[in-house]
Image (cartoon, rainbow, N blue to C red; front, side, top):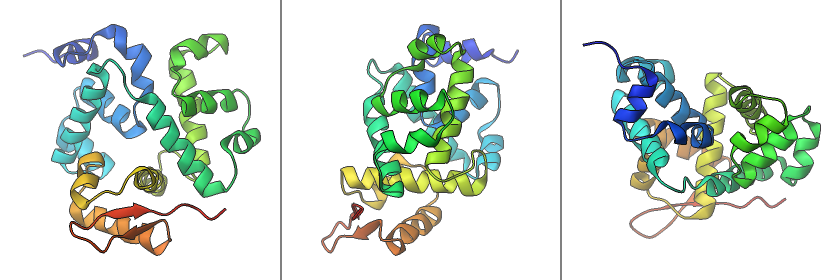
Length: 218
């Protein structure tokens, strides 16, 4: 059987091509990377080896990302709020101040991301393709989260920031965390132990035990 093209992959998953340009860049970097790899024909196992995930973990990321693309409203604003919170918690300053150190046009791209605004409208005004704008934005986002894009340590830092921001919004159990951030239980326990040791999360006393986010004192 001939391999599907990326367009055929998305159509087979119920995602019309008209939604891709508008919504694909609004996914988390991990979700976007998994979807594009799957569309290119990579197996769950191959992607998992590259991203340090189990095949089932990759499958869950793919399912979650496809569900977002099929939804009418992709909750980009909620994602932007989580990003803003993670950066401001880390740097102790408003995002608008933090982006002043970035070269143009990254500040505009980052602020648009924090507001949940799609790049499809902004990129042409900056003389950029959506792909170019997405790459610049992701590089700036990674920098603000204290990581180097593409490194294993950087991905771990981004994951911790995303979990810490999610805990600020609402307390979460281990099961809740596994559903939102697919990974092995051992890896999740290591991540949560680091957040607790860093004073960015704490564990409730009541059963079922939930992790609570800790607001920065700054």
